[in-house]
Length: 120
Image (cartoon, rainbow, N blue to C red; front, top):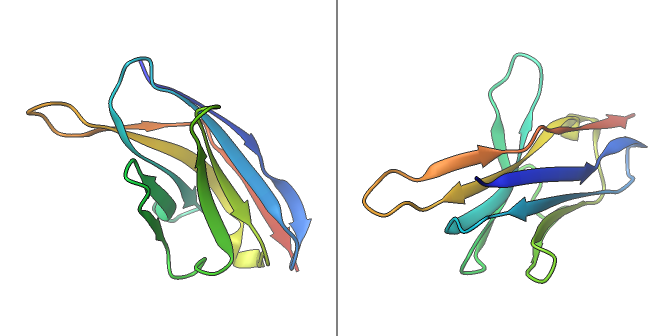
């Protein structure tokens, strides 16, 4: 079973920085992508940033140039460095891992979420 444990988050003033980290315990699963998603009240969960096993990264347009997603192979972590934060970045951030399963649909795993609050 894949397990995700997030850390980081908290409250910060606009213009500040935060770093989120997630330990991804694959336990033998073929994880092909890791990422961070954000959810705000009344809204659907949205992609913030992802990193494929090939190293390819994707970012939402709203965070490009401000956020950086990285992966630490030795520690099995995926991190999100968030700079120049704005109040619109506030929300619950979820760590995500995608498992590739032969001849079947990929499976998503989620962490419990960590709150990020940016005040103006």
